[in-house]
Length: 431
Image (cartoon, rainbow, N blue to C red; front, side):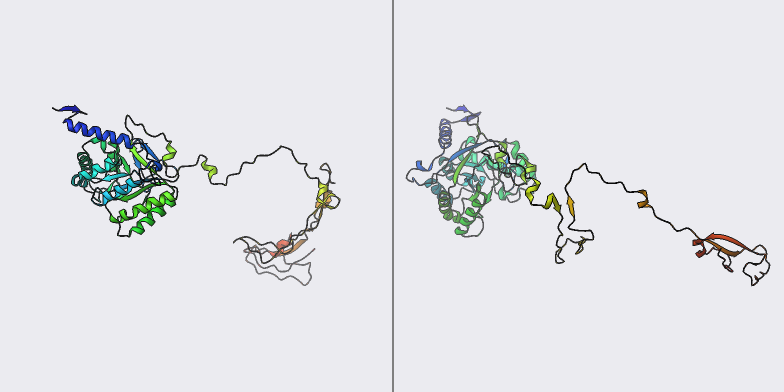
């Protein structure tokens, strides 16, 4: 006999299976503290569970986006891509179980189809399961959107078929190779799926040693102080490095956070928008660039008397302007004019500090009078051509001139100028 469950026809055994998965999710939503880890009281443990709403924050991960998970200082989220793949994925599950650590796995659809029993072990251990496309193509940033949609939808369908329950697949996805594209991100957001990038990788997909994977993971975590760590559960080097990574995180005071999706029965963890920002802006942007002035607490508000002029030790209350030493070896800014060795104005002059109501005598007008030299009249003899007649020379007497020559009187300064077009002056005469 079949029954209707969640809009689909299911057999009784499938209903029982769905109920078991729901119970597993409910039990594993609570954090497993280090002291509560069976058989390992010194385990790293899971400090808390963070519930997120993908529709409120559709893209996270500081490597690519301005938002990341709202983690506190020294909190780390572990993520694993590309599984399940025996035996490496099962070894990763055993390592996490010994430390009572919960993580998020991004499964490839073809791997979920090939090893469904291993993916069910991931869910039974209480980890979150997101998707990683159907075939892991490294071209989702440039493929046609229709093909990208099929990769996304088929990956979700394969994971759902392996787990037997759509609710077991978290609305989380990591794009293969982190090769993002706006159309792909928009499509995922329209389906209510949160795109996960990361805050730091360990480069465990490269041909490096397990020791190098450990060094990169720890150094990058220490540099950020918190964030999402990207690993791969299909690599032998990751299996070898993981125990040491978890042990070092424990020794250095880091805590593991498990992330799950919000549901109608499980609301999102209260956070502020600023908690999600990779680089949160300061509340006072203008003053944030300047050193903050410390706040002092004064014991009392007594004031001190202002110093008198007599306290300065000046002679008779007079301010002496001392000469300033000038060194020719001083360096000046390019284009500046250096000062002379000795100033042209008097130095060491005494400035009397007197009454501001003092007056000074008004200078007489004669102080500004300037005596000017009188102009000396100049008698210049300039011949004027009236007719084309030969010019008769003047006699030896200086007061007798030719009838064709007229004398004019000009200013002394004008005697030095030449009148254009005029003949030469015959003989100047001064009076």
